[in-house]
Image 1 (cartoon, rainbow, N blue to C red):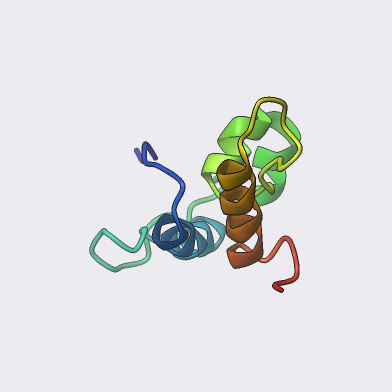
Image 2: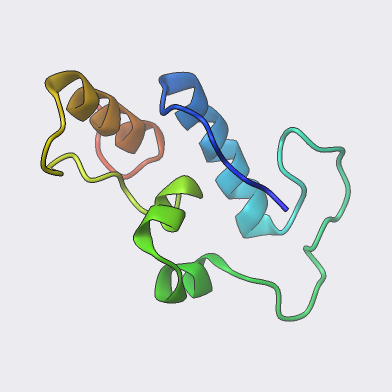
Length: 95
């Protein structure tokens, strides 16, 4: 079981790219030993399944959905970090 609980920083967004790739491939995350993981399991969750059935916050935590930079109550620094994370994750073009 993987429980992501960390502040959103550039370093953590870069890690999330690797974690997302491992999930999509069904292999262990970057902070676990190598191996086949669940890559050969029949019926394992896919990114498509998660995007159709799981709440958007969980999708964001898995790097599958972009962060909402227009969310009410965010400060300028928070908006910049969300935008940067979206760029790192490949959801937006860099500047």
